Amino acid sequence: MTLGILAIFGVLSILLFAIRGFLDQLPDVFASARRARIAWRDLKQEQTEEEQPEGVHSQPTA
Image 1 (tube, rainbow, N blue to C red):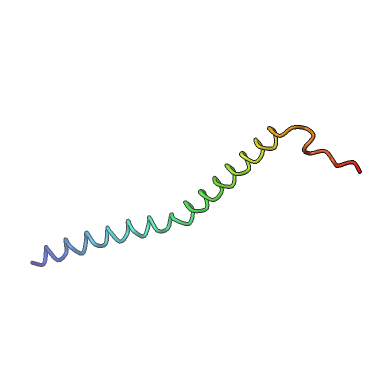
Image 2: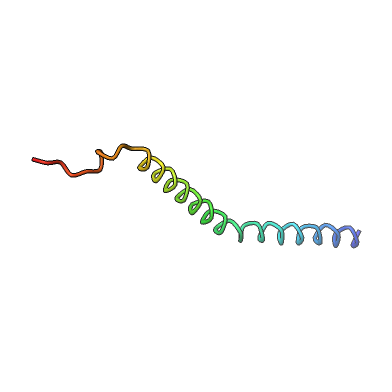
C-alpha cells in the first residue's frame, strides 16, 4: 500500500516537472515564431518591391 502511494506520487512529481519544463519553454517558442513571421513578411515585401517596375517608385512630376 505504502509503496503504491510512493509510486503514484513519484510519477506525479515527474509529470509535474515535465509540464513545468514545457511551460517554461513556451515564451521562447512564441518569440521565435513571431521573429520568423516578421522575417518571412519582410522577405515577401522585399521580393514584391523588386518585382515592381522602375516607374512605380519614381516621384510624380507636376
